[in-house]
Amino acid sequence: MTYRSAARFYDLFGSKNDLNFYRNLALECGDRALELGVGTARVAIDLAKAGIMVVGLDNSDDMLSIAKEKLAKEIQSVRSRVILKKGDMRDFSLGQRFPFVYIPASTFDHNVSAEDRKRALSCVHKHLEKNGLFAFDLEQPGVDRPRKLWWVDRAEVEDGKMVVRRVFTVMNKSKRTLNLDLFYDVYQDGRHFEGYHEYGEVGVVSMEEVGELLEGNGFTVDKTYGDFEKSEYREDSAKIVLIAKKRH
Image (cartoon, rainbow, N blue to C red; front, side):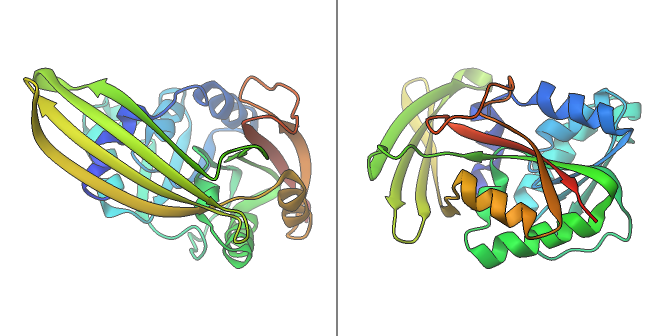
């Protein structure tokens, strides 16, 4: 999934219920962190405000542009704690290691194939300090989820404009993927002002599969939750939230 013209609308519809989870983990690990899929720096800026130095990697120029605009509005002490870099989480080398690496907002799902996921985990492992922590979350489509699903949400922006987002998803159970179509329409004074369309494909990984992936790529699963409030993971949980330790 690559956000282009619609990158500026991303934060309008993004949840904030993961901020406490990732911030507290980062503080437990020290004062440095690596975020993969930093996007608009939503989480990175929150960690920076808590005193964490964050290196944020993303492969989208448009997302990084929004992140830079947001950082420019922060005070200097926050700006100085966030370093943004262009790169692919499956293939990067920063020449340094971190006590904490995290991938929020189900961005790990963008690794569609098993090979993509292994490559990403290899890079995470290489950039973690000994006994470092790796945290991430995944969407967990229920077994009874309809093959096709859609919904609409709205958000107000400046100058009285309204952004309407329509999301269409199609599950491909044989490929273990979810195809996404996102339509963003901007209205002003009841009239259609502009519109954008984004398309993408994400992978669908089960709890068992992700556990095997981690164990097979140098990690030990430390904790598993069903949400960011650390509720027990169940088969009907909407999310898989994982914390893993670097094993060697």
